[in-house]
Image 1 (cartoon, helix red, strand yellow):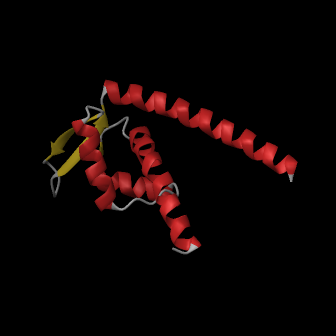
Image 2 (image 1 turned 180 degrees about the horizontal axis):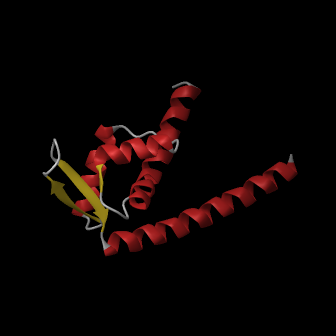
Image 3 (image 1 turned 90 degrees about the vertical axis):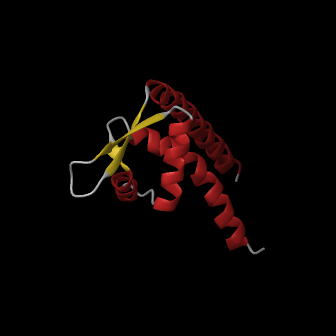
Length: 115
């Protein structure tokens, strides 16, 4: 395996965990899947629909999201929104994320001083 393949795999692992946090952060109000894909892409976090939809279904099965169908428009759309449990999980994950980022930044600055 060459270094590009290794890097690609590591980036994929890193992104997998962050996409849950990204999705929960954007579903405080009912949002349909394609709109979420577009919003994340606009923010520099591209996610394929075939990655996001299974994730949304899994988060719903875990009780972190609820969904409802909107049938009034030109085509039916399934809207997702965080549940109370999902909001709590988001807040806790966000705290862990912020703590991890702070620790990584501190670690990198120590490493830079040593160089």
